Image 1 (cartoon, rainbow, N blue to C red):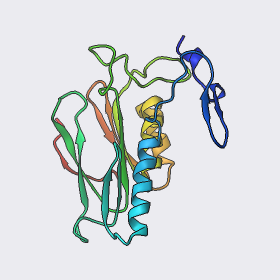
Image 2: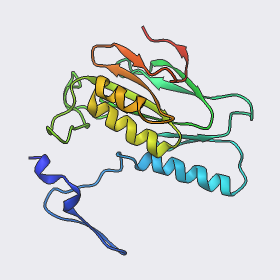
Image 3: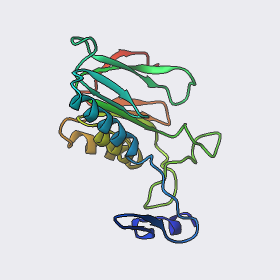
Length: 190
């Protein structure tokens, strides 16, 4: 039933309006809008002469470095332990986005959540979270969502074939997997 109410064909866009077609059609800005917002904020700050910035729009945009020398350091949330971190990621001139099953879950075991595979209409069963660093927050946001939907094996291959992108995968089993360049500073994963 939900799949019947999805698709770009149900949205009409003109120069002055956006119209949703059909009962139950909705738009969420979770796909890449948060990443885009971080990129837009970074761009506006650059235009005003700001040389170093870290932006949190729900996804993390950055350029330059902390205090002009050190990496920006961001905590990666543990998808199963409220308030705990998996570790800290450190980076300069890269952006970070995370997709997970824990923010909006429809079942206690997170098997049914707000992430849906458009091919099946079901929530993916393998991933608990995927964090991606990339050159822009928009790209990191899109890649984290796609890799989450694809699952750890196919998602890992997607990230490895995307220039400048790296990822940390957390499986529902608790297993973690990172690409070689994911900037994990301190690893608290157990």
